Amino acid sequence: MTRILLIEDEPAIREMIRFALVREGYEVDEAGDVAEARSAIADAHPDLAIVDWMLPDMPGVEFIRELRREEIYRELPVIMLTARAEEYDKVKGLDSGADDYMTKPVALRELFSRVKALLRRSRGYGEDESLKLGRLVMDTASHSVSVEGKAVTIGNTEFKLLHFFMTHPDRVYSRSKLLDFVWGQSVFVEERTVDVHILRLRKALKPFGADGMVQTVRGAGYRFSANVG
Ligand code: CA
Image (cartoon, rainbow, N blue to C red; front, side):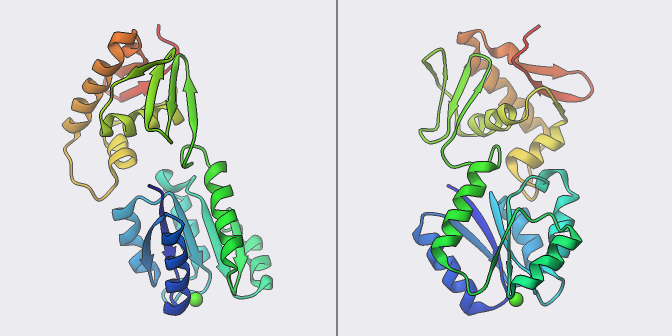
């Protein structure tokens, strides 16, 4: 399920966009201002955000810039909504970090195609994607993992964890970073939980001799790599 965070203060516009996105199969979280958006984003863990330029408590661009300062949201696809095309020039000048923009009134079909294009473009956030790392293949559309054509039996959380690893290989992540990325920032889980799921992931990969891809980096965390030493 792809989650979209919609930040727009005008209720009629927000409702129209929300309704249309839900009909297209997206899960939508709404916010009327930046304060609401901050709590929604921590709860919802969105795959994409649609941000209005004019918001009551803070300009949308400021919020986008705030997001870009956090590693977890640095690559979050963002579409900016503006009332007039000229505003976007200003936005561009400010280098807000939005990936795309649309002027109001919002043409829904155009919005859908921009949303789809952005999701496709953003690595790790796509709806239907096939990922390959070493001998491991993940297909998000069918929610399946395989090694050389043989299916790997894997739980839901391990799937999410593996998806994160496959889109962020060869880097060390601490337990708390993995919690943020895979479980979401507002979810309260102990860091030990990460170890449990790492163990399960290794167990799932073991019959294929791929458990060595999940590497423990002492005192630092975990790394996922196709280069098994
Ligand atoms: Ca507005």
